Amino acid sequence: MSKPELAIFGGGCFWCTEAIFSRLRGVESVESGYTGGSLAKPTYEQVSMGNTGHVESIKIEFDPSAVKYSDLLNVFFATHDPTTLNRQGNDVGEQYRSAIFYTTPQQKKTAEEFIQKLADEETFDDPIVTAVSPLDKFWPAESYHQRYYEQNANKPYCQVVINPKLAKLRQKFAPLLKPT
Image (tube, rainbow, N blue to C red):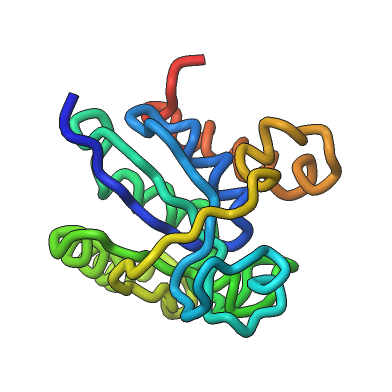
């Protein structure tokens, strides 16, 4: 096993992104939280107001010998809409913007090249608006947000919003999934 690395993504509701990335092989942990804003130790209520600058994000600890950063980017761009500014589905506000927070210069380079490739290939009908920024500080979300899907899979939001994303993940990225 290689030394673990961190990847931080904002792709809409962190309940969705956490459920997706926790299923990938090589991912050792996924934590929901907030980043990208100026408010120290933000709460869910503060971030939900949409005026803190923070994004609902996930911090992924992964083994780069088991899953590549580029694989994580591939899943990230396939499981949310990177072309809508400050919006994912019915979730609207800057806290739901598409964002990558890099932790190394190599991650920045890889993310920017990945986005350029998607643009060159015209993968999406509209321009990609995903921001690529350095990670400043990641603030963990409250405990009731952690592993939300695992604890609430039968709730309507999970059934209607998260389950289709997981079905897409299984269909499109089966080789990247942890054994069940």
